[in-house]
Length: 314
Image 1: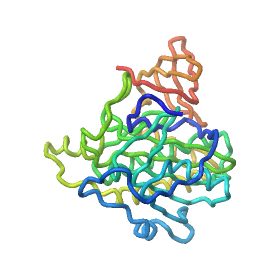
Image 2: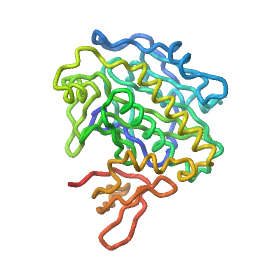
Image 3: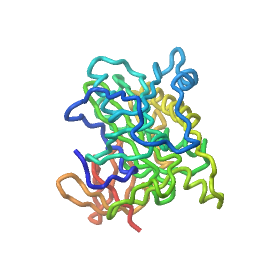
Image 4: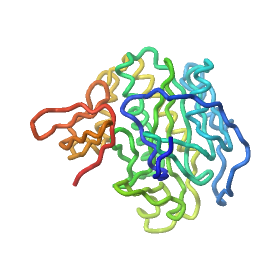
């Protein structure tokens, strides 16, 4: 499916991992479709593997494709074929990157981090697996803030925000006991390289734009993506292993506290546009044990929201 809005930051996470209609075969084309801006270094798979693959760790392999259709689709196909947990697939460019609700992800070559992670959380009950994209959001936001200094917050169900603008997002898709978590993060894109956002959508930004604005000077060199990806993978591994050891319990793993600390949604008035056209407005009061957003409506009822578009109200 394709949406009319091709904004990069429209790749967002569902509150629960969802099963794809069909997994497609990997597309490992080696030539980028368009020129890469000077200063945007390629990712080095061997260097990444040396940094994150270790005995007893989560990560088993790190691969980098020059260009592919969708890293999520590639790993879903491999999961169906029996690929083990712990595979990381990054792409310098995606021709069919996708987000939640059929939206697409568009970014210049090497200007973003676009990657997918294959996990098999068999120790976690299915009802608790809706926390996985939220877990990924905590890992990405924490790493971005630590490595770049750009304060990053989470908008449920997992948009990545810098101030009011979107840096990127997360999409989780399931097949059998496997879940593929895809991340799209705008890193070095200039304002003219980001497509305009559609009506009602958030403005789009990149780490380079945010750092330039904070320092009041232009960043002459592209941000390094490799140290950032290493930090994200390390944070994801730490949270994921704690979550699995706690059988998916967001309290015992500390995940609910970690998510609440980084949430830009909890405590705000929101409008939730639900599948089927229903709309709820009220105060985002928290997240329940299954990762659903709790919205307090004017009647006094607290309604759990499992999926939908959430708009922050003033």
